[in-house]
Structure formats: C-alpha cells, structure tokens
Length: 468
Ligand SMILES: *Cc1c(COP(=O)(O)O)cnc(C)c1O
Image (cartoon, rainbow, N blue to C red; front, side, top):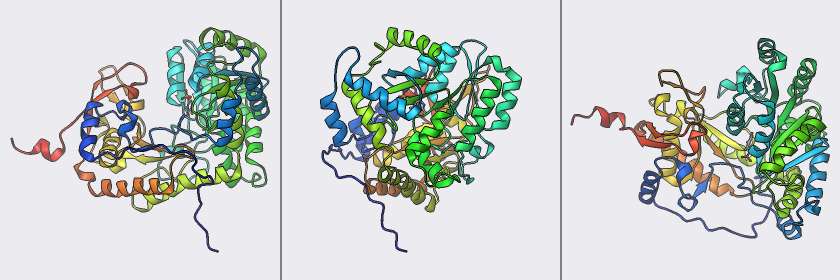
C-alpha cells in the first residue's frame, strides 16, 4: 500500500515574517545573551523550538471567539463556556481559572505542601518542582526504569513506577505525602506517554493509602493519541473519551492551556473536593483575580473553551504526532542520539552521547543548544544539568540523570520544510561534533536558574592544549 505524506490539515491565513539572520550576526547575538538562548530576542531566532508552550497558532474559530469574548467582571458568558467545557472534560465540579499552569500549581502546592511534605511524580516539571520546593516540601521523581535509557523502546515510557511509589509511601508515611502527581505526557522525561493502566494502578494505590491523586494534564490529548494507538482496548474509543476516562481516575488536575489548550495564555485547576477548592479559591482571589476569570480576559477564556475541543480532532492529532515523529525519525536515521520512541510534542536529543567529550560539569546540553543556534538560528532548550543540576555541600555539581536538548514543536506553526531545515542543521553538527566546547556558569539565581543564568564558553580542547 502506498502511504501518502501526512499533510498539515490546515491552510495558512495569516503569516508572520521570519528574519533570516547570518551566522556572523548570530555570533554577536549569542555573546550578548551570555550564551543563554532564553536571553535572546525572538527576532534573532529563525525557528523557535524553545517551547511548545503558548506558541500555538490559533484557529479562525478561536479568533472569532476572541471577538465574542465577554469581558464582564463576574459571571461572564465566556467564563461559563470555559467552565462547562472543563467540567465536561475532567468530570470535576470545581474549576479555578488561572493565568497559566504554574499559578494553579502555586495555589494547590502552597496549600498542600510545606516542611515535611513529600510529593511523588513520574517526573515533576520544572515549575512544579519549584513550587513544591518553594513551599519547603520535597519533590521526588519515580519514573519507570526504562525511562532512564534513552534508546530503549517502550510504549509507555512516561509511566510512574508503582512498586517504587509504594516503597516511598511506606518510607515517608502516607500522612506525609502531599500528593501523587502524574504528568501526562511526561514532559521532562522525554514527552513520553503514560498508559491508562498505569493511571488506574496509581489511583488504586492512592485510594488505598488515602493520598490525593492529581494529573498534570498539559498534554492529555497527545497522551490520548498514544493510548488509542498502543494500549489494548482503546482503538475504538475517541481521543476525548480516553482523556475523560483518565481524568475520572484523579482527584483533580492542573492544566496549562498553553499546551493542549491551543492558546497563548491560560490555565486551570480542576478539583472534586469542595473544601480544597474553597481554600484554593481564597488565594486565587487574592493573587490572580476573581473566581470567574482568574488572571484571564473573557476573550482568553473563550479561546480556551474552543481550543480544548479542537485539540481532540482526529485529523489534527494524527498530523501532530506524525509530524513530531517525522523529525525524530529523520534525526535517528542520520545517527543523532535521541530519546526513543519519539514522544508527542518534542524531540529530545541525548547531548551526552552527541558530545561525549564534554563532561556534565561543562554542560554538553548547553553546548548543543548554542551550536544549533549559531549554525542555523534554531532555538532549543537544555533539559539537563543546567535545568536540574544541584550542588553538594562543597559546591560540586550533582549532575542531572540525563543531559538532554529539547526541540519542542509549536502546534500548527511550522511546516515540513522548516523541519527539513532542522534536520539538515543536525547533519552539519554531526560532522563537526569534535570541535564543540563546553560551558561554565558565571551567574545564576537560586530557583529556575536556566531562565536567567549567564555562561562563558570554555576553550575547545585543541585550543586548550595548544602551546602559547
Ligand atoms: C508548562 C507546564 C507546566 C506549567 O505551566 P505554565 O503555563 O508554563 O505555567 C506544568 N507542568 C507541565 C508538565 C508543563 O509542561
């Protein structure tokens, strides 16, 4: 059978000019940004794969919704529409709108956290971990063993290790567990999906011990696609029904609408427990806004309500997952070490394997992020020891378990030729991989350092050993 190319299932109605910079210009830009692409201006970037968060292209329907937005302070039509959509999707009666995911995390984890509390997740996303640690609680990652091996194939590499979970619960005592948080898909763990069976097992364990079970549901639609394709018994269920089934297992959910909400700003907290919802709502009103808008405009809420429908459209989801795999398969075929199988929203390059001559203390991921930008103006994100490294008592780096570079793909934004350009760049970087050098941090803040840290490039090995 002849398989035709999977085309983008949309036409382009509005275009945004990309400024095509030269390598010489980019050298200056990156130097001025202290070798941290987060500090670049966006017009210095040609293809921006820094994140898939808030970078989606909205549909004509969503833009029409923007015009219909009801900006009333209380009880706006747009709020009721968003609330009804999320209630229907999550099955949770209490919905708290927030300006983005981390605001919902702050409301919830500040309340559930505090000294002595422990949170367990397949992998805590960076803002999740930061909110938990900021409350002085502890965040523990418990992914299945398979997830720690980048090349090892497993259909649900995002699963949480249930045996380890039970051990940790017994060790810390169930009364000290703030919540079990299942991140779907597992963003920091490679964008890998979580199976329904895993969610079911976790729900049962949490019920047995009386522990709150939460979903970090940022990419619940992409996860549903993988369940539909890979898990027995789901081939005939709709993507939305699969997501609803997973939500039904949890006591609540946090979602950044900037991912599978297909909008540029927004998020929510969904809860089943009235008492918990009221406690969070009090802080919501103090810090975000009144209970029927959180930090959002009426038009934002209208766009979220529409986006949460569009994300489950079969043609969209098929194109979405296929186009991510298109880039991933190309890179894998040319010998770029990536996490496999390819996840939903991003390709994760194993920078430790790509630059084996750069030790973790010199941040191989940061080196790859910088080379990628210099060569072609592609912006990517380090997810390794810059983002997750810690220091021991002597100030020595405790490296992250993996040194990854994430190529996150914005939804409905780039075409296949943009992805071909990314692949061509990697072919060049592969040829020149021996010349890349490591980096050193010169300045960093105490939390979420990857956003603002400054770096200095270390001399390449040949230069370092060359006689003066
Ligand atoms: C993006 C994200 C968050 C935080 O959401 P923001 O809208 O960026 O604040 C939390 N968890 C996961 C898994 C995410 O991907």
